[in-house]
Image (cartoon, rainbow, N blue to C red):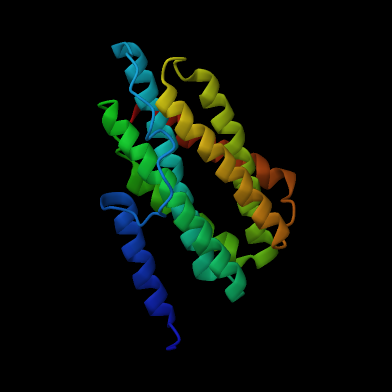
Length: 212
């Protein structure tokens, strides 16, 4: 099999970014967690709240794709690179589920998604260049924060919105699994200042994506 060059990887990543932001991401064959659930009667206020919350989650998945791709690009070992790519592929499901649910709620994805993607890709590349154990630790900490964030959204969702709830429950389970995979692959705990900074950046993104 022909070895891919650095330019090949950049082209592949560019294509992945275009699919994430403007096209149809490649997803697994898993069934949609809310596929068999019937739509409930939501008020316009509840629809608007759910759409905004799902927009935040979609923006988070856009950022996750960029992080994984950036980390895979600069990973030191092939094993870690493949781990990043596999996790990104599995999380494409989240991207599709969130986008579809936003459409069902007559909402829109964040207009700032290209900004989230570019910034996260850069952060991911830097994390990957720092070394595989730190890169994997970054994944584990990111997923830990995402799980906490999803728990908050599950509490804020309108009680009648069972379809959005089913999506977020499955996402929460997947994120926790990816954190475990990263730790088992050799990820180490990040310094407290780095964890604090990550939380601050995530807070800015989530609060902005809620409205824009």
